[in-house]
Image (cartoon, rainbow, N blue to C red; front, side, top):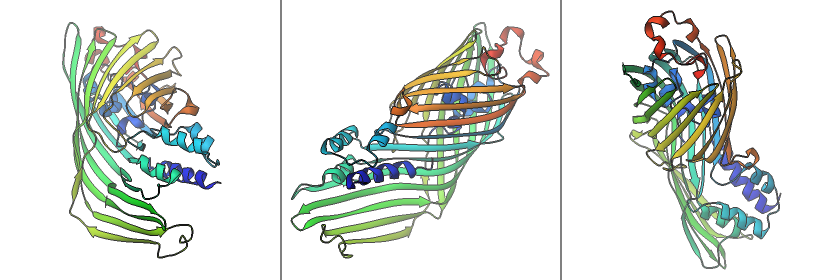
Length: 445
């Protein structure tokens, strides 16, 4: 492998392999039905799925009578620059001047941003308006300065000094224990209105944040002189609380409108083995002749304990609408992140999706989204229904409608038991005039 190819391979491998899987909608990443519909799920979600989007859906009369989750797992990995085809084309290649210029031109001014997420859940339970649910999430997000790639590809001009921030990022693992309840305010001539709240205890497992990463490099006749430091804050445990709220309505016999705020309030107090680690390095007259000299590069590490500190989860506003049209369930979502984080900004995300249920035991799903971190995404998936047993599979692209050109991917599989067909008090609980079509969701949600 050429030297330039090795540099590219090192950069891309470091970014991709270092992700344990941005703190994003944990309950949604592992729901395959949502991923297949490209996230168009705020007005569709029922039972324990609703807590990650709009707990107000729990108060609607078309909620499931009893649903027990068996398992759900999802993983997302993407960046804002390199596609799968780019990696296949340039990895291991002897890069020409034009190749390096092209690769550098693809990186936006804000740098190479990346993120990843792995979310899992099991044995969550929804019984009418009440939900008990648990999720475990490992997340990472960050960015790498464009100047770092520029320096690696083209070096530094004689006598020039580069002063740059190297990178920033955040990674953590946490478990959420959710207790949610929905309340039906009332039924009216036009439909019904409901509100809901989800209270969660958040158990922090591990945390790492790059608080500072900076370097200065100067090229002279004797070689490259550089110095820099990286400051990392870590913790090995903590706890906190969170609150999600939502409002939802059934309008007429076919429409649902929902609005929810995820992480309206949230905090994790990290108080176990909290510390700062500072890595300091200096480079003195580095060149081909001095590369083997152990005194050319000097580094040191300083660790110090710190007091507990607090981190928060990203708040997000979710707006959704859904309509049943024969065998088709049509849905649309608009999502806003209310705070920027490493690897993600404020860009809203608009998505549309559909589910075709003509084949009752195998619903087919698809959706597209634009905006947000992905830019553009295509979702595809299907489900299998056998009596009360349900299994859903999904895949989604990132950055394109073509899989080979995407900047990442999302995969999810989930399974549950649905006993909506066993509602002993159905006739007393939901009047005939308020019944929803059985094809609205799996097993008649």
